[in-house]
Image (cartoon, rainbow, N blue to C red; front, top):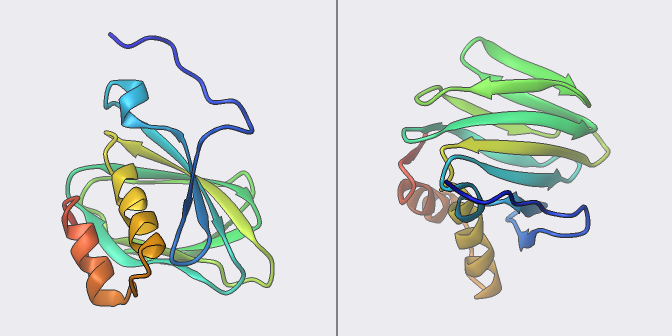
Length: 148
């Protein structure tokens, strides 16, 4: 059993991304591995994630601000603030911001662990690495995620 834990609005672990930024609001270390909550700010016109499949965790999205287009098996769907989508283990998906304004969403990762991928991205960027498609695919593969 884990203790009750919380992150204040100004708290969280702030991480750079290849585009935009992440804030780890709750990590697996805080939830006994059950869940991670990550906030993502996605700039205008950016691809947040090219199509990929997670083989070890489900990913649930809740749009906080702006519009985010999700590329799913049945086609592209754009959700505005307040919309949510749940992607089960093994389902292909990607997402992007096709608008001219910033968007923000929450990732709920079940079970936790994939927040470490965002930490890896941050460390690589801080070290001056170029994160091309091959490098991103290699980082994702560490977390049972396949780039399509």
